[in-house]
Image 1: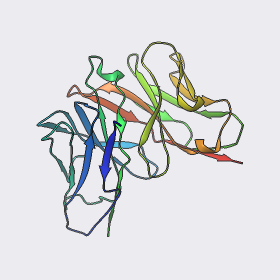
Image 2 (image 1 turned 135 degrees about the horizontal axis):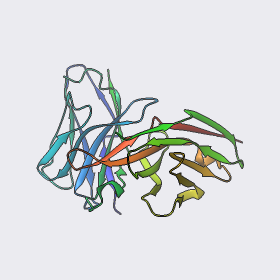
Image 3 (image 1 turned 90 degrees about the vertical axis):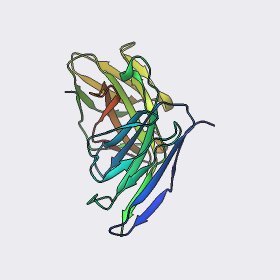
Length: 116
Length: 116
């Protein structure tokens, strides 16, 4: 059963702590993405990776870091430098077909992060 | 630059009545367009996509959308609403990002409420 998994579903962080959100996919997709969603807003891109061992900043990368050591995995670390980290975080993946804009992204179930 | 505007932040309908969720886009060339649905605290699920083939696109769960280039619109419709359709809907335009990646630009979302 192919898909994207994210863990944990809910995460609570104290001020000054780093936390890591997990994202795993078994769709054999080359590209993976992290988005942040705030109430009443669309999704904003944090980081993306088109291939293993390579990743690029998206629109709101400050205070976040990622790694892509395996094709299946793209963990996101929310560092203490992120001033307002409370949000819903979504991971996605897609193929890298020739017509790049045709490719839909497949989304995981999300992780809700709350800063205490 | 590409952009997308969802004209209604909230839409409320009665069960069994038609649904219309409006979306306008801005693009300098023929875009790829998507509609995604998000149920509370869940990830996004693709409803349908337009990629320059037929202008009337049929999706899952009885939804369809019509691409109208002259009006720069991609409205989502369903003939008869069901209680399970209550969710947040996102209109999305896809582009090739400056790094050659699959860049999605999200509208702010329309929350659909369905009343008995």
